[in-house]
Image (cartoon, rainbow, N blue to C red; front, side, top):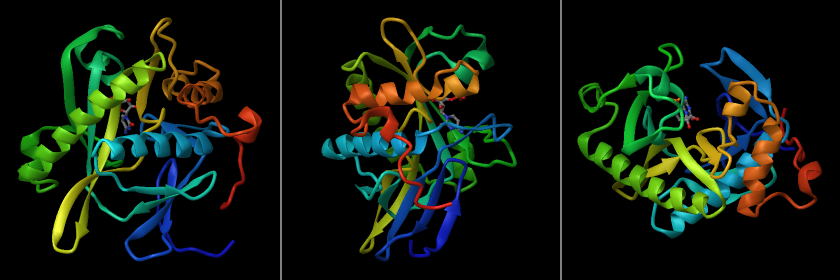
Amino acid sequence: MTRRRRIYEGKAKVLFEGPEPGTLVQYFKDDATAFNNQKKGVITGKGVLNNRISEYLMSRLSEIGVPTHFMRRLNMREQLVREVEIIPIEVVVRNVAAGSLSRRFGIPEGTPLPRSIIEYYYKSDELNDPMVSEEHITAFGWAGPQDLDDMVALSLRVNDYLSGLFLGIGLKLVDFKLEFGRLWENEEMRIVLADEISPDNCRLWDVKTNEKLDKDRFRQDLGRVEEAYQEVARRLGILPEGGPSDVKGPKTIQ
Ligand code: C5P
């Protein structure tokens, strides 16, 4: 393998310099972390599955006019993406009470919310990703009012589209986290969807049984973690050929 410049290493992904200026290679690891790195583990085959799941979802979103950083999948664990300037805000959209919302407000998990709720978190491991308001975001200059408007509008479109897509395969989109970046083309700047969309950053429950098919299986030690990711890919019709045994895939970097 040719040596490539490593631009950034996160908990679940590595970004390498891409083949052309303005591109990056996004490599999906099997590493899993939770509770801001306090819990660590490996979910075998997760990187391969998330690469495919994110490719699929970003491609469908692109078809309905949601701009994304995704260009194309390169191999089992890597995809080519546009280089963007990441906005240091995590946008969480919630449809059903779960996780930190349930804990914060004492609302039982599974309670449908009266309407979709958007929350913002400032991306900072040192500060434990604190929840922030629009006031903090604009006052501290993490994003401008227009950027925020674009992020909210895109998040709601993503929520509507993905809620329907997942419902069609018997999954409830409980909540999810999105990240956005600034993309410059000529002199113009656009806000585009970045990072990934996968069971690592979505809560997905079986519509009939409420079985959790996402990273909560790892966070809460529910077991059958690999199987949950495979089941999401299977229902989306994108489980790698050869079935689960093919999922470990080639490890192109170490
Ligand atoms: O933990 P919490 O309930 O706030 O998570 C809301 C949603 O955002 C979940 O789908 C979770 O997977 C996702 N999330 C994430 N990365 C974080 C925090 C939350 O993907 N750092």
